[in-house]
Image (cartoon, rainbow, N blue to C red; front, side, top):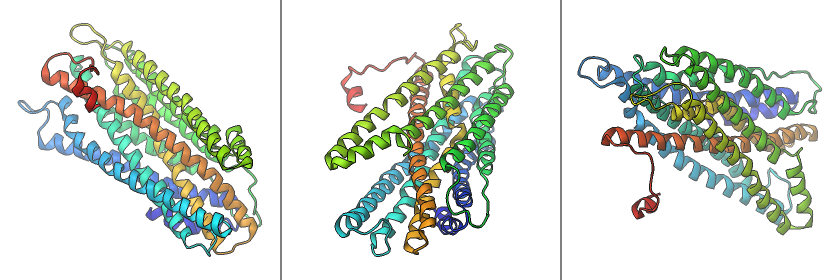
Length: 442
């Protein structure tokens, strides 16, 4: 929030000179916030891991095993979830209440334009954009990344212990290395978006969404290369020489899943595609048809993401199972870790995705500042285009956050079942929903 509220004025000022410069400032301001969020998750877990490792003397005779160390980090994930819960609820409710209230009193009752300085509720609306779309979404992805890292470390340690791998540190530290590379590749993607300061460039000459997509494509390519290097470096074991390649394919599945999520969300929310145009056309006949068409499109838009997530989980599990890692009884054990690696792949570009989310409220607030300061119409046209693109990128991050949370929850449940099996020394392979206590608790 501190970064976004200070970037708004700079973006509105840059829009007076060049649309590309305004896009660059908004993107880099969002990128700084995103890198801080992802960096805090990685650094926080790494510091805790190193502290416990040294404090407990892990690796010395009679001390805790290194494969059990990630279990001590679970509280970090609970804390992140606790904060994200209140940030999402409080920020989301405030954001929509302020947005709807400002539009009702301004457009409906008084008949004045959006972001008009005569409407004091506009200030609450602009503040709500920062609270709900910057702080809340950042907390949400922070929780998803923290939960995914911790659960993957637990699953990696458990699998290494079952397979009697001599040095399990690579499987445990792999999630931290992947997200450290995320900071690097996302930074390159963010800085690939460059602006100009040419005077007189007052109208957009290139679609801002296309520019952001180019930056995302750069990030995707670098993420694939970094993921392949990481798996070869940390996940290579002599007892299964080709296992690292299977896990690299799992990561590739996750990266492709993230890209498909972005594409699906863009199709359903971009004003250039049919769903939004159909909804706009249905609005010409009244409020009722708008609500019916909007709800039906919203329900329709969930079909493909659910299918993609399902295919990704099954494919990654199969690749993990066929990686060649077996336990003492000869059973393959890499399936769950394969899904964990796929989740890492999906979140390996999280910093850039969060950048696009932060871009939305910054562009929206810049448009409000331009309107309230009574800038020329040409400047408002530039900020309107950026605002429209920002609405699409915000929706993209919502879909990305939900998909990554679904995969992370699967990992957490799997890690929980593994830990119960280890504690009880009995196999725990299924949950019987017919038991009343389980049904009520679930």
